[in-house]
Image (cartoon, rainbow, N blue to C red; front, side):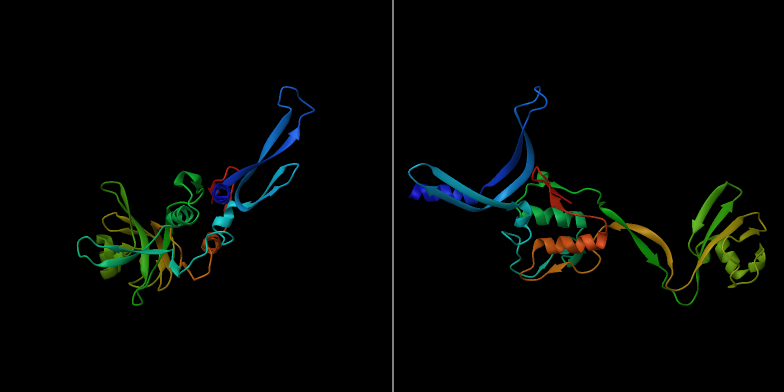
Length: 261
């Protein structure tokens, strides 16, 4: 009986592969039965039956997603923040809150809760970096995005504010220095070109007022907002939130048992 119980415990911790076979009546070059993969499943039920004529084993299984959606595993026992981590600044010893890249969130969650090896986790089409839009927040003066050309060295410069360059300061303080300028602080339209007395050329690309987008910068691709799961939630609820934010993404286990996002 002890040996039988040990075998039963082993079976309940074991995954199995399922194949469907079709008998080959068409091409003799192939095997008599051709098997097709149906996936890898987790044993959820294991029963045996003895009688005088034989020994029967019955098993039932679920797709490996049951390790993450709470059917077998993946239910959270405490409130968990998947989106941030506290890191210590080695210089000051102060702990700062840092956002975790989405790619790392997915990989670590599957590795921890489904006990998948990292080589068994496939994340496609998801960059580690994203683009963060920059908003102009100064209420007093508008921001001008312009391009200046220096004829002496044939170089082109781009700047975000008139006051950030020599010619910008000259324009702000002495608009008559530029032919075509109609007065300090007065907007003259996108694409307007001006020429300085020394031959420098300036093209105004855009005017931005308070609240307008003026550019972008590269940043880690993190979750927009709090990625917190409550007690009783499943790991897949976190993945659902990420999918909703990203858009055209999905996650599943393939027929070889790989987790694919």
